[in-house]
Each structure stands twice: as structure tokens, then as C-alpha cells.
Image (cartoon, rainbow, N blue to C red; front, side, top):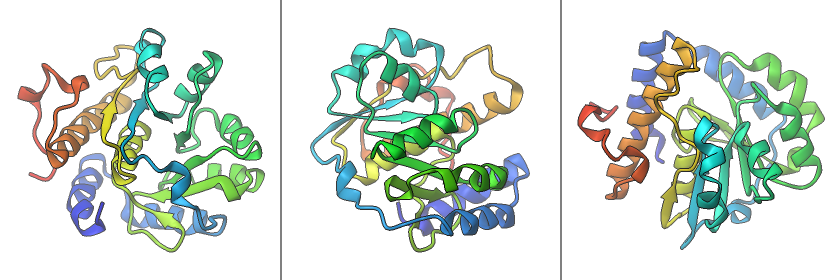
Length: 226
């Protein structure tokens, strides 16, 4: 996604949560110290069905949806669940907040990890990125991108995985393990899920398609750019 297209939506997210652009930029600059060139062809999704796996409670019931896809981009702890089920994860998308040891081990085994920098996770960047094999890290930011630190759009691990798949040419996106109404999450996570839902609606509109995961929910959604 073009940053000029993303930026107005990003500004709305910052205002809604009270987050700091300057803090996001500091995090971006910090991860850039570890970032290396990443060959995007490793995650080429052209003419592919990509399963964008969320870490919701329904994931265990949606394993076949992931198993039948051509590629799997998994958010955070969804990576562990899918791997334990014998399903290959092509890219783990994480902001290092829950299972950074999984991300570390993946890079050491030559598997791609999409590591995200934001204003709240600079300590995690400093703690974990030196332990990664950064040849296998695709660094991302929600602020303006810099060399080797990319912005494909998206806010949470899950919707960033969807925007990444779109940017890499996916012909179809499917969504195992997405639970927008998960009652177990706290208020902040619930608000982030609200934004994830709106961002997916924006993405499907941009792609001129409808994602099954949003069926029955669109009437209550507004596009984040409005």
C-alpha cells in the first residue's frame, strides 16, 4: 500500500488510541538498526490462496481452512497452534508481545518472520532482535517506512498479515481463527479487534471482493478512511 493512502487512516488510529507518532517513529528507527534487505519473492503470493490465520478460539475448528490454502500467514500465537497441527506457516506476523521465542526459533531455522515495530515495543525489539537471524526478518512499521523497514498497511498482527498478503499479490484471502467478538479479551484488545474489522472491510473494498469473515457484519462497519 502506498504510504500516502495509509497515512490518513493511521492518523485516525493514533487519535482514537492516543498513541504517539513520534514513539512509533522511534521504534521504526530502532528496528532499522537490525533490519536487513528481505527478498519478497520468498513470500510471493501471486495466484495463491493465502490463509490469514488469527489466534482466536475458533482456530482449532478452522484448521482445514489453513491446511487447504496455498500459503499461510499467521498472526503471533496462531503460528504455534498451526505448527503443532502439522500445518506449514509461511510467514509469522508479530509485534513480539506474546511468543517471541517462537519467532526467534523460526528465524534460526531459516523461516520468515514479519517483525513489527511500534511505540510500545522498543524494549522487546532490543531484547529479541539481537537473538534473531535477521536474514529471515521482514521488518515493518505503521509509521512512514524507511530503508529495509516496510509499511504494507494494517494495525494488528492479523490485519497486517492480510495487508501483506494483498501487497504480495494474493488472489484470494481466507481467514481461519478470527473471532471479533471474543469475550475473553480486555477492553484494549476489543478496541483493536474493532479496528481490525474495519481495516479488513477497507481492504476487501479496495480488492473489490467480500471476505467471508465479515459476512453479517458489514452493516455495522464504516470505512476507516471516512
